[in-house]
Image (cartoon, rainbow, N blue to C red; front, side, top):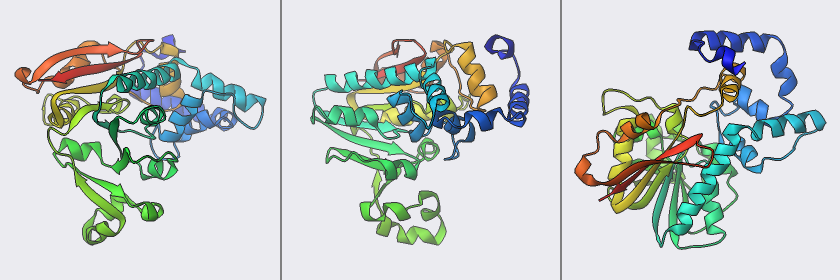
Length: 306
């Protein structure tokens, strides 16, 4: 199926998804939590923190043998292996650091930060995500780890403010609504408001965000603008790591994601990933390269600041 559909247009793939939906197949396979989240996207977007947790666990889980088998088929695919590998890659990078301040954008549950803090406490972390539900479900707490809310597209536009929900108000927080109109007056009751400042972090990384953001000729938009914004937040000698799925993703997985789940990623070559840094003045860059996790499915733009 991957080979047959690889050259289909997006319109054709969406028509195939609609056809598959009409057959009742989705109703059959939704017994697996993995497939349920993939198809129905209960939080309104693909790849949410609950999905990542399923992939990290990578177990036979479900109410019966069929759903258990389906779940493991999903989490053991090439994409699942790459996601676990990239988490391990980040864990190793964190463990090699000798103190400093680290920020993750689209952090989800910040699993790699949690694993680091279970062993060491030399680093200070800021985990930023757009999804308040993810923050509600996080059980791990540490004085070294702060969870905050930010919209990456606001950051692209130069809006560097982020919100830290107050723990006793977390269930009542709705950042999208709370930051609009007259409700802004009440923000201090639910949140602490902070601002990302230039030259603040020793390491910034984003693992699964850029797969969904377009690159434009206009360097004030999309991946190029966001890369520059993140780079400016680094201290001198700081490091920026930006993940993106590669075209090495097996065709069968691509077919499943696009035609079975209506889940689209932007698969980029190394050259296209390198282009993320095209608006950063070359004299500010100490080194730039692309590194990969073990399968080569997920690679990272690796920039070091002078």
